[in-house]
Image (cartoon, rainbow, N blue to C red; front, side, top):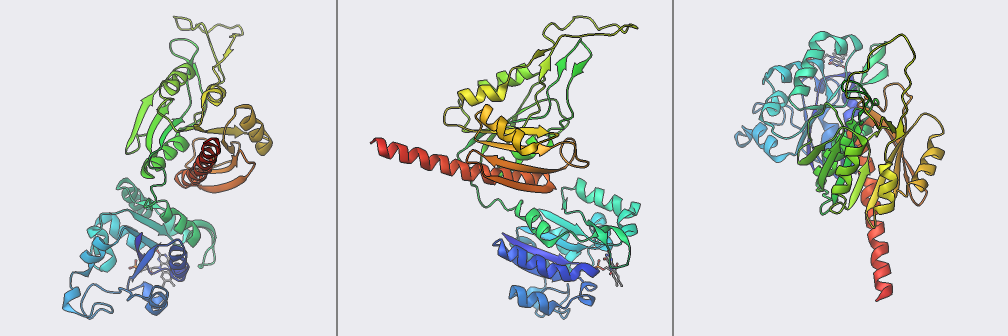
Length: 412
Ligand SMILES: Cc1cc2nc3c(=O)[nH]c(=O)nc-3n(C[C@H](O)[C@H](O)[C@H](O)COP(=O)(O)O)c2cc1C
């Protein structure tokens, strides 16, 4: 991917040199441009040496890099030639400019001319970061579809501790990688993804459910579609938009989820069961609302159908990925579940940790494969976790195909 990196005038500007290296190591081409203030912190020569390219430092002929009339509209050329714009460090000033559409230097003009994905890695003093003006600007840019690699917490150059330190360049590069879908490694696959909770009625107005937001499953569906797969998302009740190029079937109960999954099993080559299906349901739901009384209420619940176990029995040569949300003994429980449900891969996460898992945008998981291999992913944005899960799915798919081909060849 061709990445244009805009460097803003903050203390962290020197870390952008590490970001250039990290992007190059991942196979991306990098064009650097710097604001006037950035040049106070790091010299263009550093980036020119790393990239082997002229660093753009100004909008006007005679402004540093702009030395000929032929490059008078270079901001349009740069906008058209590159696949992604990343701004790191994104200063409070730059975020304000972008949010309001100002265009008084190369970077802000390029931002308006650029139609591809835009990633910001902000860095600033905690008070500046938390200021309502900055937060309003972030929200405006987020609403416009820009993505953010939020700053880390820690010691800041101004001598305080708090949020505002530029995210680790490797984390920024990982995030940028997640936009790089040149590899359509899941093309030709039909992936059935389940997501969200189920709701099991107790009466016409009440139900049993769980805290699953569906974000992990939706992230998997979105990323799988970007990587070329046909994706069918069977979703419990959640408040999330349907990802681009994904077909969604909405269900409410475990029974409805089972039917939807089994109805489409024949088309699927990969099944990723990330839904948090209720374990129990009330078989005889009263037709009228249960009245509140002063006495204890007991309800006899029956187990819901075990969709994962049924898929394990019926999957044939399909690849089956299960999820395990555990509060204790993560790896042992996950291994036990993988064997019991005949999954090819299991994604396990501890759900009793603040800020991760259920309802959160972040997750941290262990990906366990049939061969016993365990891959750790996160803590990271759920889309990045989805990328790592699908990396393992793509590898396992290749391995299973190779094994099948070997078997066929041995038979003939
Ligand atoms: C020593 C020093 C450090 C600075 N560090 C930051 C910073 O980390 N983040 C930030 O948003 N602004 C920082 N500033 C303020 C910006 O440099 C200033 O707002 C400048 O106008 C930004 O220009 P630019 O957004 O065009 O790069 C710093 C200023 C100084 C003098």
